[in-house]
Image: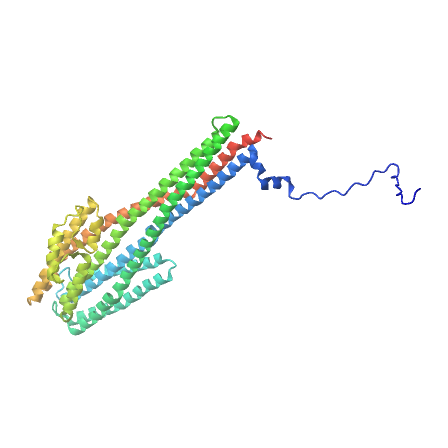
Length: 503
């Protein structure tokens, strides 16, 4: 064998040559590679599955925006109708009851031993006790409605504590009053001094605290109305947008299947489209209705109830200022000014260049409130009744406001006559007129009744709007997810037979 020649050894008989080691399998698998490269979209089953996935995502988006919008509507109805709204009513009742309590105390001390003046000593005490009971119940209700708000509960508790101190001072003043047995309008100094402490506590501490509670609750309602109603309207737009997207996708899927499989209608997809259209339409309509209910409750119910409750409470306090004016001549000027300030808060006529005093107020009130016809143009005055006049609706509300304004003018005419008598030196005549149950007290009670009747109309509008809001939302806890499941199920059922054709 020549040198350098390689020797080839034959494999042993019966043995195959060794095979090269096998390559490890691709763990990603051909399906994942195909999916990543998008090749599945080149097949009819892949495109059908893609349609289904996109439709389901759109349905979830529709469900999410609808749930958020309905949640905002539910929050607004809860806050306005069941939390802050009732707090306003409770604190308004508290303010009114407190101011009337002090008015009755002033009347009791003013008539002295002449128990038959006005509604009488026992009658005034009976009203005082009823108002005290109302104030206590309203304070308890306000504390309950405060819930977990520690700041609000603390402020309500401060009113309750102050009311206890006020009642102790009033009790002391009445004991001194009975012991002195003074003539009407002539209480001794110790009675006046004790009552001053009591009424200053009421006017400078308790009433402002109760008033601020009302304002805080009103501010919560206004903030909720502005934010939540805007959110409801924004949610309505998003529901419409996502709903149109779902409908377009369902229609596109039907067109694709009709062309690819030569079938005119896919029944399941057609039902899914109808169900989606019904859900979007019902959701849009419900959100529109909720926005309307919130607006009605706020503008035609709550705003007027708040303004009129404040007008009533301030009117009661002003009526008490008439008694204070006669009871305490040393502070007559102060009580006269506070009466004017409270009257201007109720109705502020346009006095032009005239000085702002009671004489110009009486004249401006008679001219402007006397010529105004509610529901037939803008009111020529401001104040709480000016706010009411700006939103009053023709019919029962306008008629009730007209009666209230007429009764208020009668109250102011009586006040003018009382001050004329007192200013001329006839304090006895002024006291008798102030306590005249057939004129002054009758006219004020008529005004208070007219004001309560007007408030009741707005409270009814508020209650009906909140009731409608609650009733409309009741079914929407279950309806959206149930409808979304039906639409999704119909979509899957509609494409399943077509996919089965490729197996």
